[in-house]
Image (cartoon, rainbow, N blue to C red; front, side, top):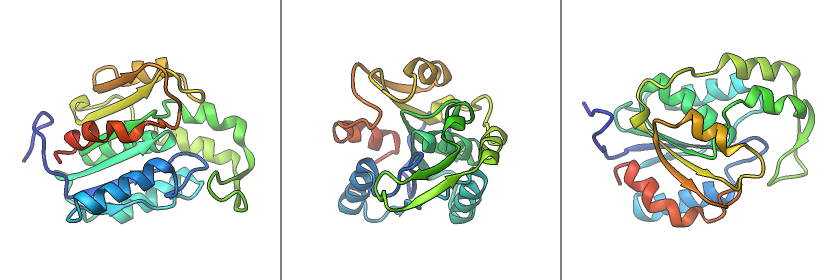
Length: 200
């Protein structure tokens, strides 16, 4: 049994994309390629999440229910960072958060209505009003083991307020970057730090 301070080798890794994003995002594809090349023994799972937060977390729960909590980990970007926090609190596993959404119920309220996918603009979906309530229900509360988390936050995030992210994850391991953007366009340069947190 590992403790929060003991690096463990990750055997199962989940990647959760953000709002309107997909497994085709630059960070998801970069991580998928890195894992396939350098850690092919690790089970990699990066599902396309449905717009309903409740359905998304039901899918995640079902897809990872048989994974060992001690050696599984989750990486989440933006809204996926909020989801990753929820899952990490449920399972007690390690998590890497990339510009994580802190108050998605508040922030996504203005997106109620028809939306398109960033990486497949021809694919539209309707963001329902009750999805906001589902996000409120998923609020993970206080972190039980902040040491399990690594948060990578850019001060230049043009979508989310880095101060809110910094305050939320203040007790966690953190990489606070000057400048940058919401997408963390230089994510490749931070992969060694991510892999170290995952025990790889």
